[in-house]
Length: 131
Image (cartoon, one colour):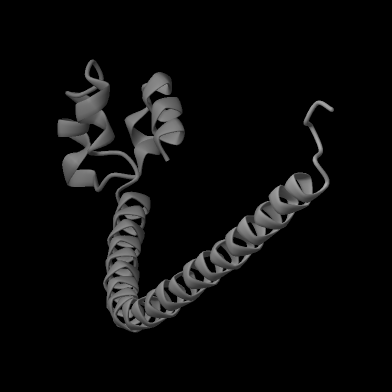
């Protein structure tokens, strides 16, 4: 839209701008100021672009509000599920911790029993002693 207006401004022909006849004189006075001239150029197209911008802003706002609404509903559900999952993971980690403790206790006892057996074997057979 602005490129069209810039082209029209460079041509310096106010009759091509599409402004109403009663505003032609005021439009001619803006031939030295592009920003002011743009306000007179293509009023119908400008109205349409402004309408579309407002409509777009409305739909963007509605989408944002709906997204927030759904997110909050899903957030509450997700939070409950996350807490449930957290409790299950916590219990699972606790169970694994217990299992590792039992595993270490069992094999530590075996290790102690094996050591005691080896020590008694060494003593009975006089291994490592000089004759």
